[in-house]
Image 1 (tube, protein in one colour):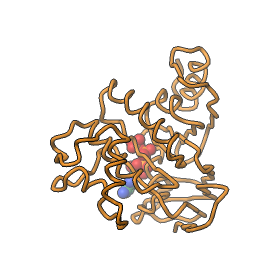
Image 2 (tube, rainbow, N blue to C red):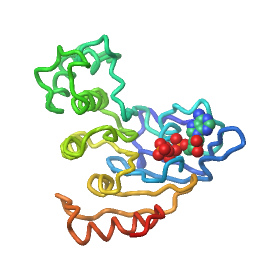
Image 3 (cartoon, rainbow, N blue to C red):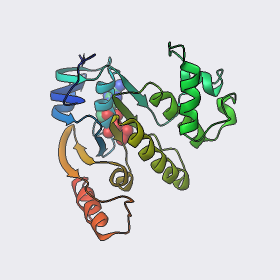
Image 4 (cartoon, rainbow, N blue to C red):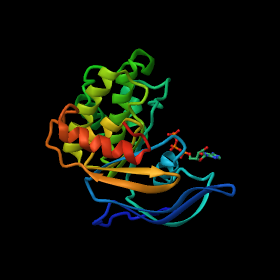
Amino acid sequence: MATHAGGLVLSKAVEVRGLVRSYGDRAVLSDLDLNIAPGEFVALLGKSGSGKSTLLRALAGLDHDVTGTGELVVPENVSVVFQDSRLLPWARVLDNVVLGLRSDDAGERGRKSLDEVGLAGRENAWPNELSGGEQQRVALARSLVREPALLLADEPFGALDALTRIKMHVLLRKLCAAHQPAVLLVTHDVDEAIVLADRVIVLDEGRLVAEERIELDPPRNSADPSFAAVRTRLLDALGVSL
Ligand SMILES: Nc1ncnc2c1ncn2[C@@H]1O[C@H](COP(=O)(O)OP(=O)(O)OP(=O)(O)O)[C@@H](O)[C@H]1O
């Protein structure tokens, strides 16, 4: 169902028009429109069951179990990061990062990516020798070594402790500044969305019900009144009143 725009320079990294997705006779996404600009970081919030993962899987071309209609244009080069790192346990860290890369300099690029995520020297470790946060760093390295035009992330920090999450936020911002992919990040964490994104969108029962462009200067501090005002508006859109 997705059209891959290989080789073209697009003014939009993602263009979704009238997207409908159903499981059986149950519509999960209803007539959804979404554009993401090249290099733009969009965070997607929504209650459990609102259709966030269904949208992300549609963009990733991983939604073979649903029916649907609509137009969907995504770049050819898309990387996906999930809540669990999905590393191959029988492959060393560097091999996990470069698996499937066919270029002669794959090893060198893999080492550089591991260095970027703070894991230089761990190339020969096995995944089970790493902490959960380190495994997610490897997953990010594996995604970014492919220089994706679009990075899809489904709650990538959801299983990490609060301190590790903050470190991962700093890392992801740095990586995105360096590589400039368009990003769609699914998260349940409103503050995470505000800290990271250029724009936050809210999904409710398969429809986009709110949008906030985040124009706060970095470093974005959750204690700032302007941050709190955005948080209140987003919580309101999520049906949570304080
Ligand atoms: N394979 C499936 N078969 C049938 N229904 C499904 C399937 N996958 C998801 N659904 C249903 O579609 C709806 C949207 O699911 P989805 O996973 O997209 O929501 P979500 O917003 O990502 O939720 P969460 O935040 O809990 O991960 C849910 O009601 C879910 O039960």
